[in-house]
Image (cartoon, rainbow, N blue to C red):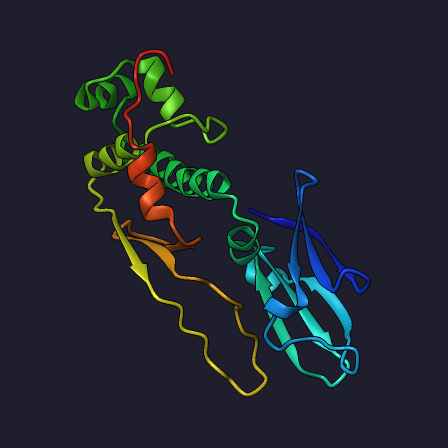
Length: 203
């Protein structure tokens, strides 16, 4: 999920991440590392292109620097539905890339997945949020991928002034998909199990 803008709200003591849809995800100063204060205010905050527009970097008056990732904002604001959609979107994009590279027709992929061609197109549509994660993983397996969901504890490191990713309360790695492993927000493994109801003929 891409961030469009960052707003420092000193009155509410929070930094606000604005995503492309216009929705705002606030994160209190108390949750930031390093933590802003009345004596060490945020002087600058910007959407960090080096982090794929998925994080906001801020600089305090003291010169200390920190970073707030969109995953942390989603986790703090307890939006599990959005996190599940984020995982589904990442898997869908990867499945689409690999389907194109495979050279297999949509009809053949649908046959091997035991579904219809229209249903396969719905499965590969990144804008379709009503899909089964189990079917996406099955499709990736047909495309010679192995997908593992691994929950890891947070590991915040003090790098002496280097940028830090703040406050992942655990994360899920999508690994085994050759190319770019992706980190997504906490609790997605449980959400994956909850949402893996299968793509049926009505979706």
